[in-house]
Amino acid sequence: MIPFIRRDTQLKELMDDPQCDKVKLQRTYRQFRWINRMVASWDRIFTKEVLRSVGPPGTLTMLDVGCGLMDNAAYLNELAGRYGYRLQVTGIDPSNVVAEMMENRRLPDGFTYRQCYLQEIRKNGESFDLVISNHLLHHLSEPELSEFLNDLQRVTSGIALMNDLRRNVISWAGFGLATLPVRWYSFLSIDGMRSIRRSYRPDEIRQLLVSLPSHNGHWSVETVFPFRMVVKYTADGGFRD
Image (cartoon, rainbow, N blue to C red):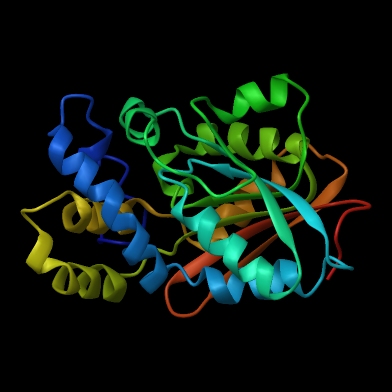
């Protein structure tokens, strides 16, 4: 098989191994703050898709799925504040290491962390104005992704933005070179390159969405320069472009 034509689902990220080095794993979570600021493009995505389309300023509820240490949510709250909005955030992540690191972590006002999966949120009947995830989709198989997106529809009353990598050999090589200095310090470099190999392309997501059970809303898949994509769900009656 020609590399990058299809997802390399045989690759497993080191940080997903329950027996991985805990110290390196903690370092990796801490490094996510600066690497996401550099590559995730949340400033452009969140401003375009949310802050310019949600109506009068006020408080918005937001669910951050796979939140890690909630650094992305804190950054988006800063951005929202510039437009007169305030985010009331619930972050969820099933990781035991994240739960341990969050015990003594000081969160902004209005932020709550819970150790759970999205299914629990859906079963509780909870819903949020905004739902986000960052670098989560590529961890999921196609059946897992279908289930995840189906649950996502049911907890989103406004907009959901799934921000993820877009498989590309140039980004794979570039990320490997850029993170070479920390290759042995944490899992950031190796796992980042594996994540790119495991990531979806927009056409693959669109094909999967065709078979997704319909709900009261619509989906779109948008590319973001240079090597990213956003899977967006807009609930009927929710925020509009």
